[in-house]
Amino acid sequence: MDKIPITNIGFKKLEEELKTLKSIERPSVIKSIAEAREHGDLSENAEYHAAKEKQSFIEGRIADLENKISRAEVIITKKLKSNKVIFGATVTLEEVGKKKQLVYQIVGTEEADVESGKISISSPLARALLGKKVDESVEVYSPGGSKEYEVENIEFL
Image (tube, rainbow, N blue to C red; front, top):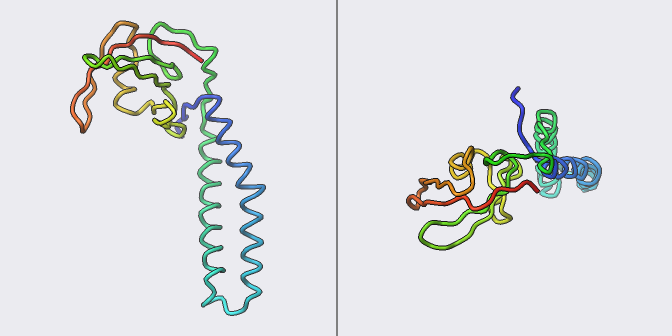
């Protein structure tokens, strides 16, 4: 299996979610199933079917998280040093012609969240930025048309 790059912060979040699912969510849904069974006929028991469906989701997510954690290649971004954009870099960009600044950290696919400034390493913007230095420009093609950005700063937080 291939290793999955992930920041140390993203890895901790996966571990916390797994712990919550195993120690809180799983026991809770097992209790809900037991209570629903006490109500009698399971074929017409909506509570029982809903609890079983939730249990199925939880068990699937646990398996998914355990798989991702076992394949994770944890990268401690504070220890990285480079004058080029690499995985884990926090990049300040300026959209050419708009004087609009954007700040993104390049992270693993599992921890990407554009609204909080984290873009997946497999996103078109991140792929275009990889290997670029400060003052270099990139053109990114997206469904909304192409945009040009200039790299203003690269740091590792």
